[in-house]
Length: 176
Image (tube, rainbow, N blue to C red):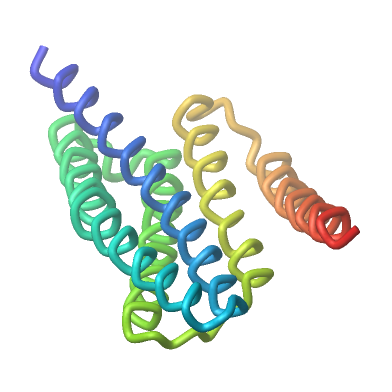
C-alpha cells in the first residue's frame, strides 16, 4: 500500500514538473517578444513576466522536480529496479530532462537580469524538447519490456522532426 501512495505522489509531482517546464518556456517567449514593444509597454510587460517566471520557477517547478525525482528514486530503491533495462533507459531520459531543466534555469537567470540571448523562434523550438521527453518517458514506462528500441528510437526522432516542421508552418502562418 505504501508504494501506491509513493507512486501517486511521484505522478503528481511529475505532472507538476512538466506543467512548469511547458509554461516557463512560454513565459520566456512572451518575455522575449515584449522586447519589441515600445519602451513603456516593454518595461511593464517584462517586469510582470519576471514576477510570473520567478513564482512559477521557484514555487512550483523546482520543488516539483525535486520531489518527483526523490519519489522516483525511492520507488527504484524499494522495488530494486536499478538493473532493469527499461528503468535504466527511463533514468537516462530523466537525466536528460534534468539537463533541460538546468538549461531553463540558466535562461531564467539571464531573463531575470534583463539579458535576452535567445529569439522567440529558438525558444519555441526549445519548448518542444519537453514534449519529446514526456512522450519518450511515458512510452518507456508504459511499454516496459515490450518496447521495441529500434522503432522507439525512429519514432522519437520522427516526432521531433514533425514538431519542428509544425513550428515552422505555424511561424509561416503567423506571419501571414
